[in-house]
Length: 325
Ligand code: GAR
Image (cartoon, rainbow, N blue to C red; front, side):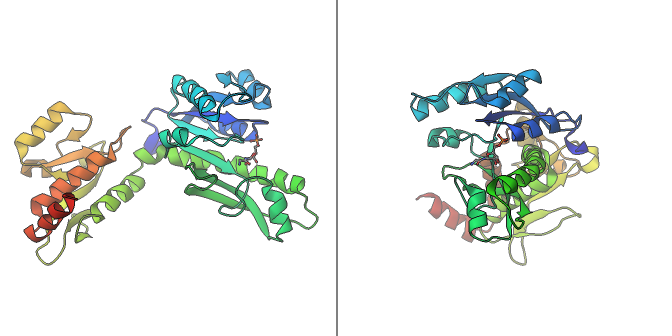
């Protein structure tokens, strides 16, 4: 994780309903000196949840609020308030046996993950191990996924299959699946929180956005990924720059109107823009990507602007027409 060592640890709130063994696994993983996240809150919908006592003993802040007698949305709002007050940037659901309101889920989209004891998309919901045994499956397992409005349905970040043995009961199988859960969850959480700083992930994001523009092709330029307009006379409109020439930045270089505009951008937002070595002279500005809170719509609009500055009329005209709708 040396790449992330210079970034502050991501703050994570863990929501539990019961034992909290996954929470404990996440917590103890976070005690590694180079772990890229820290747990700032353990919250529960059950004040008696065993996991809360462990959190207290380990000196982690706790919050609990029984959901009984409360409207789902109101309970979610109270939980979310505690999460926000803790400063958490991510939420890990760890045996949190509540269906969340769509409002709560959409606020945290991409920043809330869950662990589920099956190989999704198989066996959403409850009694997963009994259903896997009943179906005669060779393997059960666990999945870590991003939480979306649909129950146990968001994009899967990782899975571990666990063999079903002759004579397994839901309890014996579930016990082994838990070992797998404890290994998988912290890795996937680390993967998620380091994404915004990892060049491989940032490159993939930029590439997706660049390739959405009409007739664009990816082509290496000076050994780095770059994108240009298509055809024989294609022109580059974006270069990916990964810590070039001793720069600390992972960035995409886009075309400005010229050095004056670039200087103005850098003066206004020095944490977002920089003047790249060599390219800067001809008005290419570096849009820094390995920083917290990148606004991807902003990146998208700069890629489009840069593309427009070199794309043939035939194509920009088409885009203008599409934009009218
Ligand atoms: C875990 O097996 C987890 O995957 C499951 O509850 C258990 C919680 O155990 N979660 C779900 O079924 C969510 N749909 P723990 O409290 O010891 O972590």
